[in-house]
Structures are given as structure tokens and as C-alpha cells.
Image 1 (cartoon, helix red, strand yellow):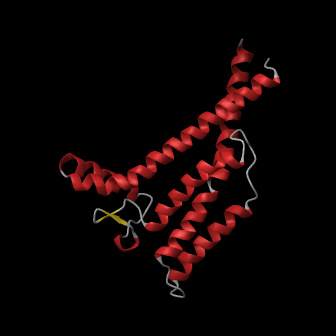
Image 2: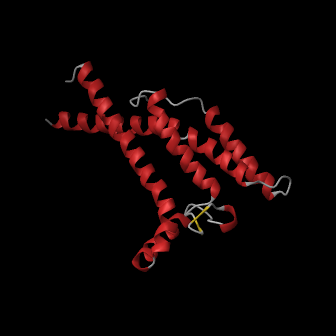
Image 3: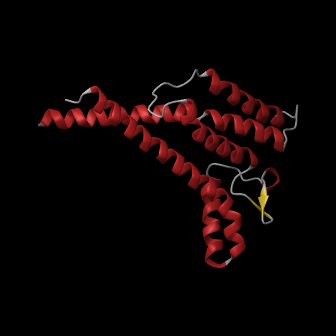
Length: 177
């Protein structure tokens, strides 16, 4: 049986692994967005890799040329809203340990997720309805806000999930012995 300080140390180690995995995947994801146009400019096999990156991101983004930022004269792998969702997510991940312990299991009130999500939804809905045309600024701002709050829900959720899986497996192993 573990004492409290060992359990606390285990939670912190696990939380650190979860946090750095989320951070690493987010950095790679974000870099790929900018790598697509860059690799296309290199030509040859790099152009094929670029095509694969664009195809990969086409599953999560419409990639509309008119609604995308451009680099080297080519659109990024995602539209402006998606870019800022990912940028906001990255910012939220970086700021998270400054605000919370990474071993924290508690998410903030759901209202902090609903407000940016409702603003994003309204930006889309009002544009589709023809009431107010959205802009690069409105798409970027709503994307940034929505992306920023997500880590404050995702990180504690993943930490709690992996802690419970780890505890379950540990109990199963100790029960067999």
C-alpha cells in the first residue's frame, strides 16, 4: 500500500506526462499548419508531404482560400478561425500551469466554455443568415476565445482519466498478487 506522499508524487508524475503530451502534440499540430505552405514551396517530395498535410487538415477544416491566412503566397493548412482556435488552445495550455496545478482534477464552471462557444456559434449563424457578415477579426477573436478555454477542461479531464485508469490497473495487479 502506498502512503500519501507516494500517491501525491505519482499523481504529479502522471499529470506532468499528460500535460507535456498535450503540449507536444499541440506544438506539432500547430507547426504542421505552417509547414504545409512552406513545404509546397520547396517542390519535389516536399510538395507531396505538403499535399498530405493539407489532406489531413481537410478532415477538420473547410480550408476556404478566402477565409485563410497565407504564407509564401499559399493558404495555411486551416482557415483563420481554426488557426486561432489552435493558437488559443496553445496559449491556454502554456498558461494552464501558471493558473492551476497540473495535477488538478477540477474543471472550471461550464459557463466559461459556453460563453465563447455561443459567441463562435453566433458569428457563424449570423453570417449564414445574412444578418451580419463575419470577418477575419470576428472569426479570429471567437476562435481564439474558444480555443483558449478548452485546455482548462481538457487537461483536468485527461489527468483524472489516466489517474483512474492507472489506479484501476494498479489495483488489478495488486489483487492478483
